[in-house]
Length: 484
Image 1 (cartoon, rainbow, N blue to C red):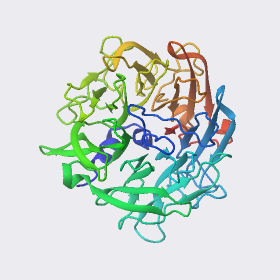
Image 2: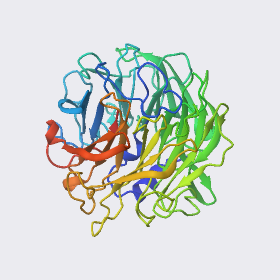
Image 3: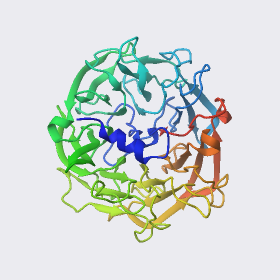
Image 4: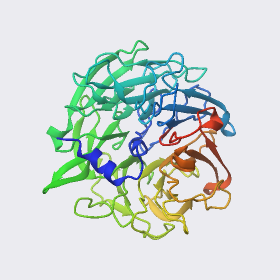
C-alpha cells in the first residue's frame, strides 16, 4: 500500500515538516511503560530528574542547511535548567554520520534504556540519511545515556531490514515481548513497514534479533506512526499503529492496536488521526488510547470535527474496552475556546499527571488557533483526567496571549505544534513544555511551564530558543519535536 498518510499530512499541514505530528511515545528506562504512564520521564544522566530533548530539524550544521540538531536540557530539583544542556548533531564528536542538507536529524525521536545499564538512551530516526551511493535511506542512531548525560552514539548496524526505505520514519521503544528488556520499533516506507529490534542493543550497534510486521497485509492499515503504551496492564508493551486504510475511492486515517507478547498481534481498530498518546486517564490501571485528528470532520476523516478533535478509547484487562469511545472538541463543556474551522485542535498530544492526583491529564495542541487578529497563533489546552475519564471540566488553555507567558501571539507562530508533559523536578507533577517551530520566521522557540497544586500554571513560565542554548541562529524549526 502506498504511503498515502504522508501525502495527507503534506497537503493539510502548514509546516514544511511534519515531525511534530510523528514524535513517538517515550519508554521508561529499562522497562515497559506502566499502565497508563504515557510519558515516562527520560533520565539521561541518572540523577533522578526528568530531562528533555528538543529537536531543530532545519538547523544549519557545519554549513549544511536542514541538517538538523537536538538540544538536550537536563532536569534539576528546580526543573529544567537551561544552563545544563548539550547539543547533539552529526557533527558532534562521537555521533555517527556527517551533516548533510536534508538529513533533518532530530525530527523523529524516542527514548528507552536499550542496553539495560539503567540510563535512558535517546533514539533518533534519521530517515533522510542516504546510505552510500544507493537508493536506500534511513538510519537509527542511539545516543547513549550515562552519568555524564548524552555524549556518544551508535547506529544500529545489525540485523537490519532488507529494504531501508526511510527507516526511522517513526520510532517507539518498549518491552514489546514482555521479557523485561527494552525493544525498539521502527517504521519505514518499504514492506513490511514495521520492524521490531529486540533488545538489548549493544553499544556496537547490534540488536538481539529483528522481526518484521506487515501491518498492511494483516489489518489493511499501513504503518506511518507508532506509539507505545500498556493498554491491558500486563508485562508487555502494546503498540498503536497509525496509518490509513482504503475507504471507497480513497483513504481515511485509521489506527490499530497490536497487543504485546511473544509476537505482536492485532487486537482491534480504533479512531484514526495524526497524533496519539496512551495514558491512564481514569486511574483504573489500564492505559487509554487518546488519538488526535486535527482535520475537519468529513467522510474521509470521520473522527475529526470542526477545528479538530481528540478521541479516547479506553483500555481494560482484555485490551480495548467495550466502553463507547469519547470524543472531545473545543465545543465540549468546560473546554476553553470554541471549535472553529482550521484550529487544528489535536495536532499534538502528550499525557502526564499535572497536579499529582494520580489521573493522567492530556495536553492538546491547537497550533492554528486564531487569537484576536493573530491568525494561526496557536494555543494549548490541558484536559483533566478523572474517575469518569478524560473530561473538559477543569481544562485550562495557554497561549502567548496568556498573562505570564513570555512573548506575543503573532500570526503563524503555531504555538502548540508540539507539546510535552514531563516531570523535570521530581515533585510528582508533570510540567508542560510547548513548542512553536515557526516563531521568529521559523527559528522556533519552546516554552517551559510550572505546576502547582491545581496543575499547570503560567506563573513563572519562560521561553528558550536554539541560540539561547548555543545553537545556530536562523531557520531551524527549534521545538518541532519534544521528547522526554
